[in-house]
Each structure stands twice: as structure tokens, then as C-alpha cells.
Length: 170
Image (cartoon, rainbow, N blue to C red; front, top):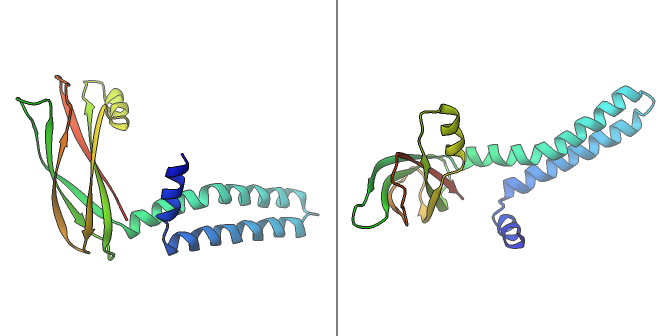
């Protein structure tokens, strides 16, 4: 857990610090305003509630949305092939950098999940793939496209399955 937290902190960029500082400043401003307006109890309690909701949800949603915008990319699944001589699936795809920034690294993850006739189970299976494999691509310029190949192994599943792709870029 400590390693994940230090890796997260080392991966922060200037915009993240600006976001966290502005949320903290807004939180303090709302708390001070609630204290100043303490004679209006209902409004003061409302300001305190808004301040705490902003303090919890602001950095989380702001971080996710900001990184979705700053590090925009698109993934395309070109092919997937289950090998017969080895317990593996070969997934080929294409990653395109659609942002205005160069990516230092992108962690591309391929996940395999079960497919059933029940649409609710399919939704749940998509959230928790039974097999995942990741690769890291480095130094992708703005507007550039990179082809990649991921070998998901050992892959022993014999029934119907689907492959999902995801990318986290910095």
C-alpha cells in the first residue's frame, strides 16, 4: 500500500497540485464563511455540508476528469487469436495519442471476461475480468499511433469470452 501511494504521489503533475490546492482553499473559505454566518444556523450548516462534500468529491472527480482530458487516447482492437498449441491468447491493437501532450508512458491492459446470455451477468463480468495482462509503451508523441501486441497467458478458459482493452497514460 505504501508503494502504491508513493508511486501515485511521484506521478502527480503541476495541474494536480493546483487542483488540490484550490479545493483546499475553497473548503477553508466555505468553513470560514459558515463561521462568520453562524447566526443563520440553517445556511451555516448547509455551507459546512457543501464544504465537506467538496473536500471529499472535488479532488477525486477533478483528478479523474482532468486526466481524462489531459491524457486523452483511443484504443482499437485489431485482432484476437486463441492459440491452439499453447494456452494463450494473442491480442493486437492500436493506441493513438489524441491529446496535446506527449505521453511518457502508457500502461495498456487487456482483460478477458466471460460471456453469457444474461445481460446483467455480462455487465458484472466486464467489471471483473478473469484474466488480465498489461504492457507498458514509452514515449508516444502527440498525435502518434502505436501498434502493440499483448500475450495473455496462461489462458485455459474453453467457453465464450470477450477481450477488453484499457490504457492509462502519463
